[in-house]
Image (cartoon, rainbow, N blue to C red):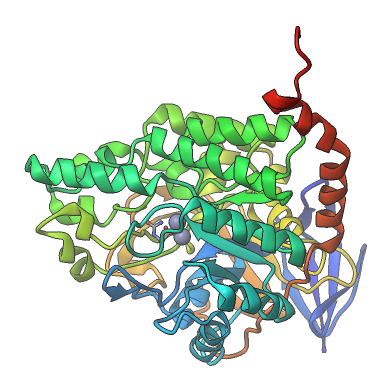
Length: 486
Ligand code: URP
Ligand code: ZN
Ligand code: ZN
């Protein structure tokens, strides 16, 4: 059975051209003019782009005394309806602390439910010999990224020495560390201070997590990664202070990547001052939404290439769950949604306004992250041999975002009321149409697959070599080695 996507304009991260795409089974078989197939997918007046990859989701995540409501079934279907064909979800170790058991647990939950492909990042939430040993097994299972929380004191947070040990282990295994960069000690102290002063509402959340705590942690993580000789990916980069640290590191030749979220690009801190407690609490996430200056910095970073990826950090808790924090903002489950709307909002606020080109849009929604995660061009590309994960993106279907019509099972939407000017006409996952606008598409639970991601041995070896070459300069920085009189 073959399909041909006809009469569209292909937009990739580096070029734009008119051509048909022939799909044989799960793969792109040919790209050219006047191609024929058993079935035609109409792309006239539309763009043909790689399916979106959202590298930051928390589906059914146990967190802050509850479990995120969005399921693997509803999450992958909601994503598909918005043009996203792959999610990378975070695996958290359970009570036994075993990484391998946690992966098995995530497989058990996700496999029967997913309608598109997924992959995993593994969270490192402590440090011991068992974790050191199991990291190798996790990499063998196709997980080449390990996330470290520098915040959430008393829960997921790791200390600097644990992070350094884990980063070194990543370097040895050809894996890449990820960080949630906020100074968790300062956040905890500020939470206590504001609570004791009676500032217990959602606005206290923003006050307790100022941009400086994110900037400090980002700088610290970069330094630790540099010392360990490993690349670094900073998740949910939300402010100029963190962006500045990433920019500076990259300028020095360090492999540091930054991931703004669509929420931080478009929603600002005034949301936390809404008089409606539910409204404000639904928007509580970490880092919090920032001021417009910070948004400008993030947009500039995407255009300039100092920030590479737009994600969602989809961690969707219902209003009832948010109300666990009625007696104090530190108890509001942290997280917001966005995986259904990421492409449409970024297109409308980015491409339509001239802040991003169409090719940059593709780069930051799929191709860059596929490269960073070592699955390019299997995913994130429109080339012969790639998986046929494709979105027919229609720049003429507008809508006003509303919880009432969304596919996500959450009872609200943080983008409620925003008018978007483009949407997915069709979404294909490995050649299957899993979303067709206006055709009442239904999810096909269980058809999605886990995508293993190979280790980055070549990059890390190169970095280790670079470390060796620059070692004498490090020695020269040690005061004991500076010749007298200099
Ligand atoms: O508030 C957030 N971001 N919740 C999800 C967990 C995390 O920190 O990524
Ligand atoms: Zn985080
Ligand atoms: Zn997250």
